Amino acid sequence: MNLLNNFFKKLNNPVPAFVQTKLEKDGSNEPTLNSKPKTTFRDVAGLEEIKEELFEVVDFMKSPEKYQKMGAKIPKGILFYGPPGTGKTLLASAVAGETNSSFFNVTGSEFVEKYVGVGAKRVRTLFEKARKEAPSIIFIDEIDAIGAKRHLESNNEKDQTLNQLLVEMDGFNKDSNIIIIGATNRLDLLDDALLRPGRFDRHIHISSPNVKTRYEILKVHTNNKPLDKTVDLDLLAKKTHGFNGAHLANIANEAAIYAVRDASEVITSEHFDRALERVIAGVESKSSALIEKEKKIVSYHEAGHALVSNILNLCKIQKISIVPRGEALGYVLQLPDEDRYIYTKTELISKIQILLAGKAAEELIFNHQSTGAKDDLQKVTDIATNMVCDYGMSKLGLITIDKNNKNFLTESIQNEINNIINTCYDKTLKLLKQNINDLHIVSKFLFENETMTCNELEDLIRKEAAN
Ligand SMILES: Nc1ncnc2c1ncn2[C@@H]1O[C@H](COP(=O)(O)OP(=O)(O)OP(=O)(O)O)[C@@H](O)[C@H]1O
Ligand SMILES: [Zn+2]
Image 1 (cartoon, rainbow, N blue to C red):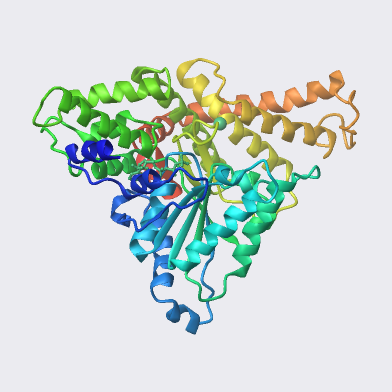
Image 2: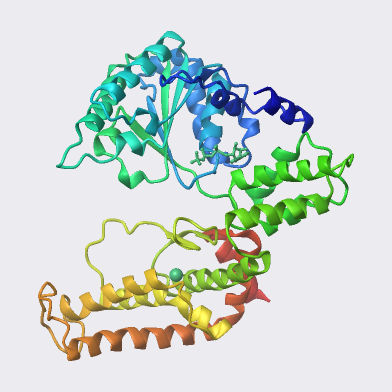
């Protein structure tokens, strides 16, 4: 502990509060990790909308009367979900810091035990302590370890632990000043009972940082470090596509250690370069040149989807991104179709074209076939198959074909499906060729900024047309 403290002092950095809590964990199996963190929202870079939403929770805890007077209920449970290393723990500890609350930092797996009743007892103990030291924030990382969907072949111990958690949450009375924040990488794994109103009913998605947020994270983590003039954080942010906050904190830290090793007064850009290579090597065995190349391909791929969607004017785009998310290297987020049940043939054809546009853009620009369109092709195949087999929209006429029959895919059906898809693909290629300038500028914007809103897309295209 002392060693670590000295280490942080040397880096001219306060010991981050959540590190402190982790270190205070005693040897026993009881969850006793509590502290009063000094972390504030200022320590969390970017994530502005999320901080705003949490600020309301903070205000709730500070002056509950204000809300109670209006009959508003204090939120009990908040769920953070999203990829690892994006600041979920940090945010939770900032909520505790902002409200001057005790912070209980536990992990779901700590409650998973062989013996029936042990996990449940730990949950009970944890809540007892939190009540005693209220106001409290209980942070349960990897909550899926206790809160995963209950299956038919029930696991008694796990069920009891989850039940105990539900009982504790339901047992809060209105004025008990405890908020539980759960975190998971997989929202879809959680049992519905946990997500019901009055339990974890606020879901906040925390995504991997784009280039602007990465810059801000780097700023936060170099704030107290002596940087040489040569250090260009803006450039470093650009070079770290696909990195999360934890990686960036790590780079800043490694660079500082290299500087100490060199007995240097300041941290130079060369220290950062070494740190970057080291962290890259730990993250993936890719060179920065390869990362750049992939980023360029993904930029064109997503620009293709976005552009064709804009031209065909079918779905409203919410956001376009080349920041990796789960297995996807990039994505176009569309506003949900408002409760639509009926599509015309023209609309289905447009949908297929939008889905094929990523692949088409790659072919047009790089003249290659890549593996990055599997998901798109899956969806395209589904739509085209439905058109032939369910909707009577092919030369085979107004018939339906039972797709559950495992021999349903005859040659003539396969031909019709191929026909639809190939015709769409050709049309999409042509459309992109006609709009190749737009494709270049949209992809360039994406490459540089990594995310793009619908308005930005429309502005860009309008400006290009005016030129
Ligand atoms: N937005 C951010 N601003 C500043 N630092 C950040 C940010 N996001 C992440 N970090 C840094 O990354 C470290 C790891 O973040 P944190 O533990 O909060 O991630 P997490 O989402 O809880 O990850 P996991 O799911 O792996 O537990 C933090 O200690 C912090 O140094
Ligand atoms: Zn795609």
